[in-house]
Length: 294
Image 1 (cartoon, helix red, strand yellow):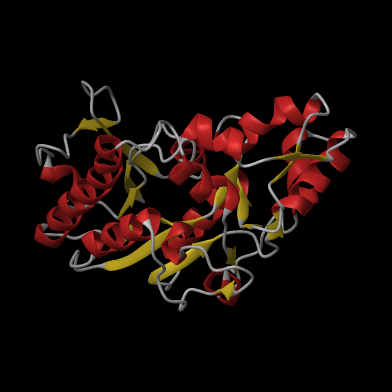
Image 2: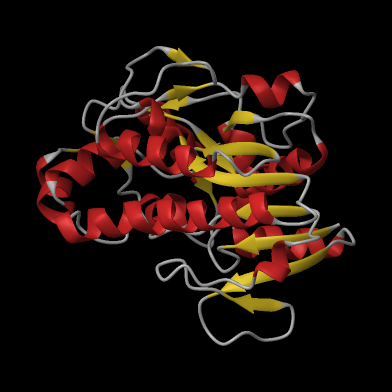
């Protein structure tokens, strides 16, 4: 397949592109700088893209967007988070819809934040969208992909576990030093997925018949307290400290800290499991031992 990928240098994209290439696919990366071989320059903010790159491609995988936890949520950065997703998605959907030979599938990024804070409720793909900034972003993000005129999948991704970036990379030094522990009461759910399963699931969706919302999370979500306990077990370090909310809220800002650390979702990958996808890392302990080679 010839596959166009945006966000190829991000945490997910940097793992996905080598796997697609290794499996014999031709990948064209959309980049914002001067293009090199195997790349094409675009500027979603200005609506600039070479439409011929999309026309005749077999698939488009859209993963780009400003990092959710990269900066404090000022009003201007919240606008950047939203616009970087919505404008780029609308642009791709429009170009796909206008192509003489449309790609057979459009895999468009989204996140489990669309469900909002739902306590202990198990959330399948048919669960209602929630409220709050992240939920609103995800709703607009997904709506922007509608109208591409081809099979479209919303990649509702959970917490991606990788030693190369994301939450796990930030947490590892503390846990290795025996200073890790739960956030607050620790009863908030964490719906996670290993980077290997994330990449394999996206590749699976290229040829699957699934469309619409698909939860990209492991089948065993876990509370934050249990997450910390498993981390401690795998690393053979104590993980009994509790991080009070005041510190992260002062560091990150209350809205961002609450959204990322002190609330969560109990998400179930019903669509993937129903389609026969097999997770290499179905439990957190298996995932961490594989990632950390323990």
